[in-house]
Amino acid sequence: MRVTFLGTGDAIGTPKIGCSCDHCMQAWKEGKERLRTSLLIETGSYHLLIDTSPDLRRQLLYAGSPHIDAGIWTHGHYDHFMGFGDFYRVQKPPVMYAAPEVLEYCGEIFSFLLPEGIAVQPYQPFTLCDLEITLLPVTHPGAPTYGIRIESGGSVLVYSSDTLRDIPQKSIEYMRGADLLILDAMAPSHLTISKHMNYTDALNLAEELMPKELRLVHLSHMVSWDQPHSAYDMEIYDLGLR
Ligand SMILES: [Zn+2]
Ligand SMILES: [Zn+2]
Ligand SMILES: [Zn+2]
Image 1 (cartoon, rainbow, N blue to C red):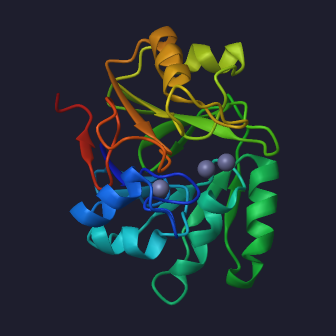
Image 2: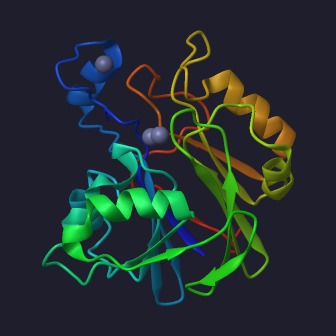
């Protein structure tokens, strides 16, 4: 299983429009960017998309224009699903998998594309693109939101892009000991964000979950470019080859 970080930014992206903070200015100077957070998972000949960010068009171009076989929506926030329309006249929109309430909300907005959707229940593993996948409820006030556990050939990836530190104990059990853990860390440690973890929260959760490797995503422009464990856009991580 190969993971490509298509984007590692928050809902706003970095640089932020109109912002002249040090991190945004460094982005402009060095040609760096954080597109909205999403992942591409490759296994065999399959390409699975985790969330369809508003930057989807550019992300697929940067990733070499893969044909997407299926997708999963984690929740119905703008930065995680509104790019689905970019499939229009590019390929048949992929079948989208999500928890029932997420699928209903996102599918309704894109009803003009006649999307195919399959509702899946949390904590009930299903097979997709030769991967065993389980949706895990997390805590993201205002929207039902799911982390994802993906297992392939003995390797385990756990992803939770939008959550507070205090997630259900049952989800914690599914998230332990991953080969690669990907977590939300929207703000530096001195800032508290109402719906997201900051850097200290993320490290604290990672300490409990004990992954082999940790990457942080959903990083805002408030996060310095050299924060440890930060993923970067188009970073590729091969599970099973390490
Ligand atoms: Zn988000
Ligand atoms: Zn800024
Ligand atoms: Zn969100």
